[in-house]
Length: 125
Image (cartoon, rainbow, N blue to C red; front, side, top):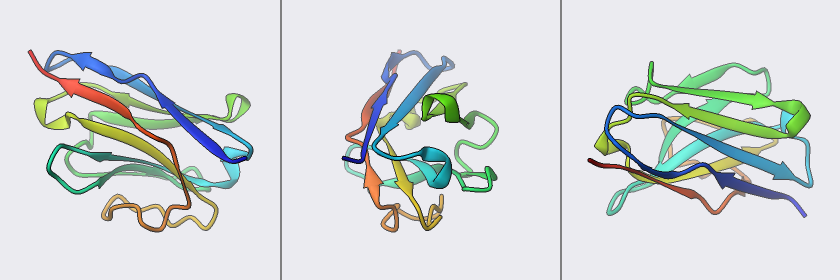
C-alpha cells in the first residue's frame, strides 16, 4: 500500500524554524516527483515546493530563500526546512508524490497521485 506520512509540524514563533518530514512506504521516492503543498484556513491549497525526478527544485515566490526541500533516498524521506517563518505560513502542510513528474508550485497539486494527511504548522507569538 502506497503511503505518505508527514510529521514535524507545531507551534513556532515568528522568525523561528521547523523541519517537516514526509516518509514514504510502499514505493521508492527517488522515482517520483515530490511536492509540498499547504492550505491555510479559508484559502485554497497552494504549491510550496517541488523536487522533480531529476532532483531539480522549485519554490513558490512566497517561500523562496526561506524554505528548502531535500530528499534522503536511504530513508525514503523528503524534508522541508522552513526558516524565518511568518504568521502567513500558518497552514496544514501536505506532501504529495507523482510518478509522471506533474509537480508545480503554481497550482493546487491536482496532478499529484499520492497524498499524505498533512501536518499543521502554526506561526504565532
